[in-house]
Amino acid sequence: MRNFDQFGIPVFGLKPGLRRFEFEVDDDFFKSFESNPIQSGNYKIIIDFDKRDNEFLLQFDIKGTFESPCDRCLADIRVPSEINKLIWVLGVVGAPIGIGFGYLLTSYYSTRGINLVIFSKEGMEQFGMTNFIYPSVNPGDYLFLAMSVFITALLASLYPAYKAIKLNPVEAIRKM
Image (cartoon, rainbow, N blue to C red):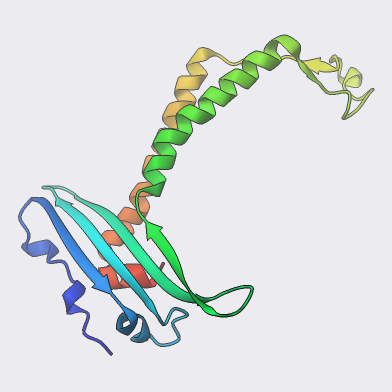
């Protein structure tokens, strides 16, 4: 078994501030784990560690390649992979795009209506409704939805960060 002390971060010995830790893993690293599906790979790991008085902020940037058999020819090929700020980007960019599309579709269908005849010709009339429905949304609901998406994305990114704080970098890579 290989000595993983080189991948440690001295959390308790650091004073508050931003630090950058860089690690490289190679074939020896992957081979040191029994029954690991990845036996060959090269990764550069950059961890920006921002220690504050009451919290830690970690930004992982993992880039590299691993060797895997090709699905078509079964030859070993190098597969590039990258892990970085995906959750934050989705929360910040996805909310305005989704709200914009929602607003456009609601505006369009609020004047033209949604025809429900294709689902049931008599079904809607049995409930005292017409075959068309006209959706409407309060403008305040858009702000509520935007804040809900932002808070959900923030919470979804905090839980993995909290788990990552408790792991050393070796275990974090192994759980990818």
